[in-house]
Length: 135
Image 1 (cartoon, rainbow, N blue to C red):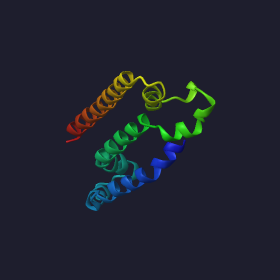
Image 2 (spheres, rainbow, N blue to C red):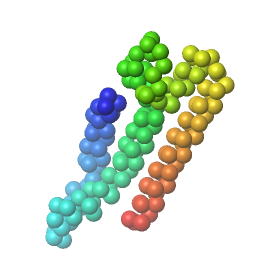
Image 3 (cartoon, rainbow, N blue to C red):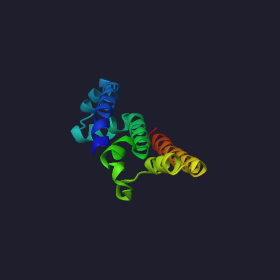
Image 4 (cartoon, rainbow, N blue to C red):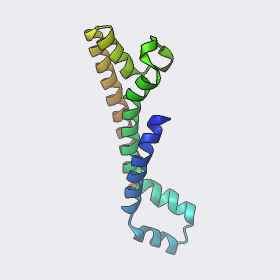
């Protein structure tokens, strides 16, 4: 909830900037052609926001996989291990800096990198494929 609240404002500003970049002439032409509000939204607004949506989804996914501070502060690490709230980055921190398993922590970091890179690549390919079909 905390991380979602932190990113909501920034993502809103990004979407507002994306909405401002949509030319008004497209909406005027759609109105002349007899398109309703839903038709304009599905045919103009949503496709034109695809690059902004890709950026927001990619960065938010990366930030979600790198959550550390909120969980570390809220779980009170002084009371011992509490694995119900552990994230991958917190597990990396525990392995490398509390248990001094530097090699294992490095392997976790590489796995995190590969997962983030893979998800971003999949999102990029899906966005590229959908923009090809719309052209």
